[in-house]
Length: 170
Image (cartoon, rainbow, N blue to C red):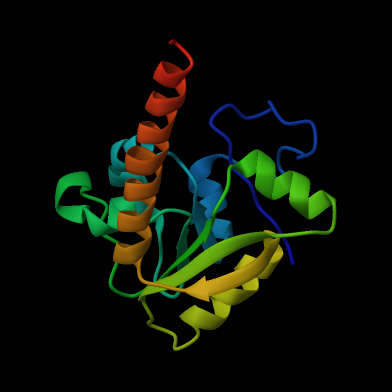
């Protein structure tokens, strides 16, 4: 597997070498076959007008959260019709995913296919789930991933945090 990276500020990561594995975004998208859009939801919406024209036919567009795609009318993140669009959504922070991976363990992840042009989108999502360190994967849809994430993060976790804060105050 050959990895190509782009960062907002080239030169800020000591593990990638500019011109070898680290490129400006335009060049990275041109060189890559799987484009991993791991920006925040807000940043995906802001950068999409610049990124979309660079995604050529036959590539695969990868997301770790389905919000931008599910709410495409609002975010304006509308994938080209001639690319696979997949999701691998680890159920933990990037730091947790990485630390468990380094320990030889994994984290649960959901996988989904939004668009399957090649007939291999699910296979790609599964392979990438393994590559990022998923210990267990279950199939879902982009919509279900977004709704469960919004409910879990903004509903349950926020409410639980509120209860913890105020129960300790008395």
